[in-house]
Image 1: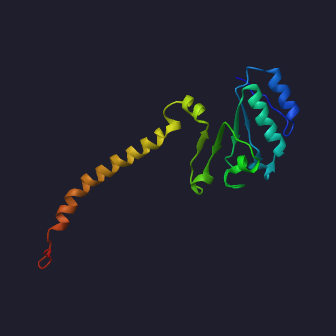
Image 2: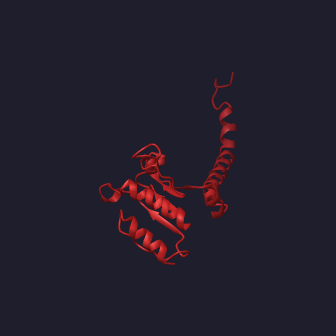
Image 3: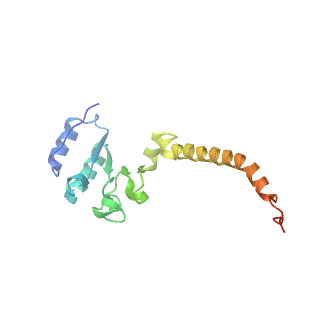
Length: 159
């Protein structure tokens, strides 16, 4: 497994790398607006050129919207730059600051990822854990509820 780095906003260099390593590059991961660098933004023409080059060379385009998703436009960078990723990542912005992350993308690719993470299995595990805890609490609370419904002092009989 190798990573090839390309200078930001240099579509010619990107094309050279894709040609030189034809058939061995699976994806291009790009963060169009770098949130950790005071919001340095890529040239929209470069992002559109990257999309076109990925299509031409059969490379999956992954757009990292962990920082920019829903902050720069309702549809994130993809809406802002008029480009559509094959896969994209989102994080806290989708949950109002709560720690969560999402991998979204084309259906054909998401189906290849497999059952589990792509279909919310970790979430289902958490839900089932909470269901078990809720059942345990109900079981433990049952004697308390039944004793609470019985009068405990004279004159406290239920009506």
